[in-house]
Image 1 (cartoon, one colour):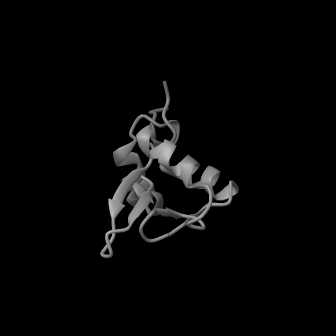
Image 2: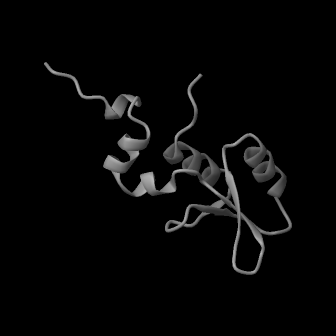
Length: 88
């Protein structure tokens, strides 16, 4: 079973109206709406939950550092098709 990569997860969440912090990978929305879906994703292991300095829980895309660097992405997901190198 193939798991969704950070690029695709961020894209899908963005299309659903969630904001993504480019620096941290935090997924945010209006505090009064749409948090049930983020909680479900966190329970499934697709998002990480961390507390900030004010002890508020935030949702974060795992392996977010991979989004900013293709080489870091391929180190994390070496079996993805775009990371495979073939001798021709």
